[in-house]
Image 1 (cartoon, each protein chain N blue to C red):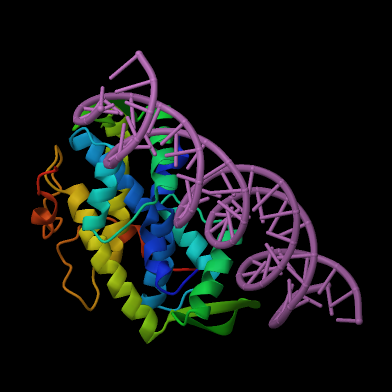
Image 2: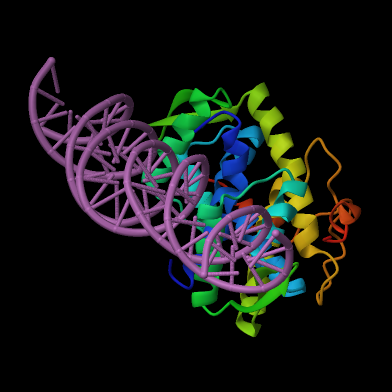
Length: 125
Length: 125
DNA sequence: AGCTACGATATCGAGAACCGACATCGAGAA
DNA sequence: TTCTCGATGTCGGTTCTCGATATCGTAGCT
């Protein structure tokens, strides 16, 4: 694991969640997702992206529809009802995990929710 | 990938980020981290946890100090200056990635920041 | 001191995931 | 039909993850 890769490692799963998120917002194809991620300074290789799309489709969270754009065939993926359900579920989890890391530190991230504050203040031993 | 495992998969990196976060807050040992994660309903196997700790230490983000607690040897890890730096860097990234997924949907997560709104609304050709 | 108990830490092998490189596909141009 | 080229799909080597197992180290006991 490279020094710089550790941050990427922290978010690799999260990047994949973005696929589901975007597919819930609007139909999106693989090439657009790649492009989108670059905006964020991330990169998901084709060897990861397409299998992920296929997996999400196989699990019933995405469905695709072929279109032709500029003489090119593209598969546009859209989140199914089940996909939106799992997305919301992921959002809740994320809420919980993120709130803790962003809260109460030497930074001003008070906008984060602080629901689980009490759940982790029990004394050890 | 199991159906239920996909959500876990989304956050596996996030879970590891928690290690760094807790180590920045206070010295923490492997056993406590495991315990902590269970509060969140997550689980990181020992075969993943310890190598991760060693990696973070090798990269210079953590340093450890052995203590004896209840007759047991424990290695307490604490974030170094470099570790806190990378944590803040990760926080910014997280902020950015999370804000997008939580914002402007059929839910009430408006507490999330919306700084990068403009960065991804350029028309696709 | 030597022995045992036990929790914490560390390691190992099998399986899975990731990535980069390469292959395939398909619509329009020539 | 053949060529072009962007988009999709696949493959092998490398790395990561997990569960099981091993080691380590302190304290209590004799």
